[in-house]
Length: 330
Image (cartoon, rainbow, N blue to C red; front, side, top):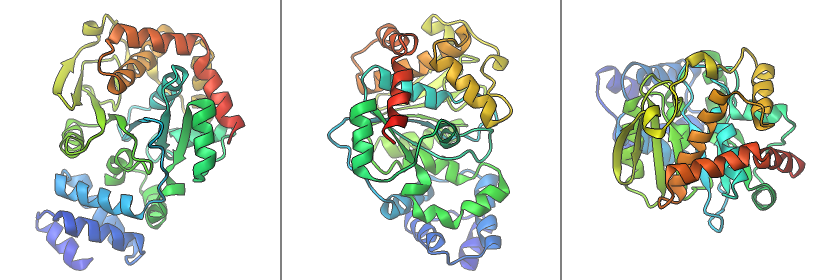
């Protein structure tokens, strides 16, 4: 690790092969905590390169426990986290709304590192039991249109950095990696990033593959469509700037999507929205994200049609039913 750290301290970049090897060595617990913290800190102080991110990703995917959902045309809906905005669980709610339309969702997630409540915190609070058993997960996809892939169950390599990440309680390059290493390799991705640099990196990497994708960054820093500002979206066909007004939406205040100060607060907000009792602002944010996710899977669908499908799922309590069925079958 000393040689790698010296190289990085000299402002050099790692090749894809070097990045892959380092992550394999981290997974094999070859380094001490001081080395790990030093290594992670480098990527907090300068942007990660495409080769570095590709190498880290390849190592994690190679080391992961894989599941095969190729029969289901799934989508993953996930953000990097680390945007420091402390919203309610928008991507997780969006996942259930999309599942409520009949689309299969293979959601990859984890406990929160830098906010109050991650998707794993949320689902665990409702009684969901994490598993990496492919048959159980396929049964959940069949019954509830959604399954949940709790990252630590699929990425044993991450055990080596778990305590260090928790102690740091800051966003690291592992936040950036998370959305790119879904162990089921879904055919569709709707991803959010905390900055434009990361959105571009994702775009470079995903455009080399066959999956459909949409990558979102809100210009005021959110890793999802927040309706508090315009946002940029990258897809296979290029990039676009979109404002809430372009979608016929009102711009909202940041306070309208605040997620509370604890997992208990976040769970309460989550349930209120899923029961059809969210505020207009909360509902519109979830439904807008869901509409864009549905358009990723079917690019012939216009925004208005997708939004109505999402609205029918949320307010018709189909999304709520998906959560109930997921927990029953966990």
